[in-house]
Image 1 (cartoon, rainbow, N blue to C red):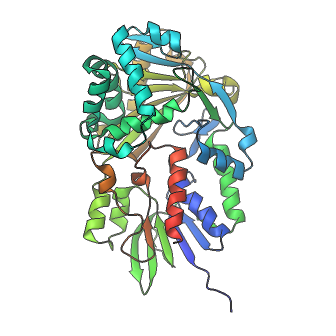
Image 2: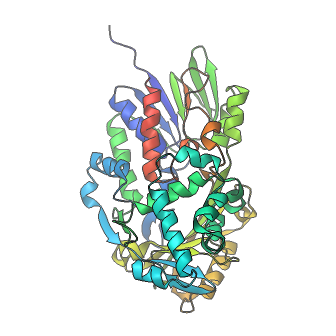
Image 3: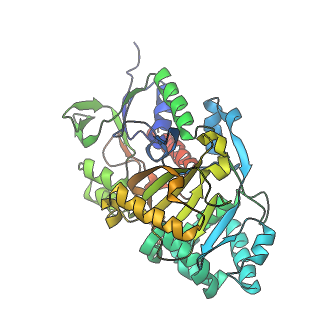
Amino acid sequence: MSATVERWGILGGGLLGMRPAAKLAERGGQVALFESAPALGGLAASWTIGGVTWDKHYHVTLRSDQNVLGLLEELDLRHEIRWARTRAGFYSGGRLHSLSDNPDFLRFPLLGPLEKLRLAATILYASRIKDWRKLERIPVSTWLIRWSGRATFERIWLPLLRSKLGDGYQTASAAFIWATIVRMYAARRSGMKREEFGFVPGGYSRILERFGERLRERGVQIHLSCSAQRVTPIGGRLAVEFADGRIEEFDRVVVTIPAPEAARICSCLAPAERSLLAEVRYQGIVCASMLSTSPLSEFYITYITDSGLPFTGVIQMSALAGRELFQGNCLTYLPRYVAPDDPAFRLSDAEIAEQFLSALERMYPRFRRSDVLAFRVSRARHVFPVPVLDYSRRLPPIRTSIPGLFVANSAHIVNGTLNVNETLGLADRALALLED
């Protein structure tokens, strides 16, 4: 007599849902994957701007990103990855400054010799720390002032923290900056040498297309534009109700949507579990993609320390990938990290375009609006959790009190920053719990 095949429902078609869907189907499970958007990928999804298909949000691969490289190997895409060195800049005091190599660092005008020495020592020291849990008990500002000094903190670290966390930096732990430094330090071959990043031509559109093909080959049922509204235990199984009124039953359900949304649809959870999910504080993003005929500068990434600009950085993907992949044009991302309830989410695309283009005119004297071929705006209210003090102790459980119900999302990344490599690593760790 054959064994009963378990039916799995996975809610969320980002990489955190796609990865376990593939593995569970490979191991004999009957898997259905549901995504509320019209395409797979979540925050890694792509779109078309000015005839060019590329990522909605900026992504790169580091040579240390073994989870990403492993996925590319599984998808027979690793041979397609290209590596390139990039240049980085700082915009401060109304001027652009290069900070791409050792000579640039020595000439960097925002810091004196002693401040530069302390900054370099902070980065080197952080890159060698192994016990990140101790850092969870220290406010990030306290730790950075201790190691880098107050002047460096106020001129460099504080503007960068505010650009990513907003006022949330006041409650963030030093583990946040440790994880950021460790990841970016891995992009350098040694010391303060130049960064090298990787990408697949076509961006994640190419990767997700192949991944979707593999899922279908393994029998995964993919449902797009399908939003789950409620998960309810019924007679030893789990019923999922969708926005169109349809109800499907599963033996096990994996919820990979952001923590506050998971708390909303999983009302069957114990009050303490729902509270942990609902209390995770997220940062969202309003991210513009701009296709133009001319580059803004020579830098792949420009960090901004000046206040008053409507975006928090400038990322020129074409400076990394080359203009030939963009029909000879330049693709630039202009991200603005904000809280989920920020008024920026209520601005129209036209209002955002006016704010952002006006700021580019102030930053780059040679920039002309006539150079812009296309401008699109992506919005996501829940991108990454703010790593508050003692964050790992407040972590919602992946295995819930409801038999067969699991919740895994970006809130469970406790010793890294949100990126594709960490997401895939989390998916593999969650998979071990799903099948236990």
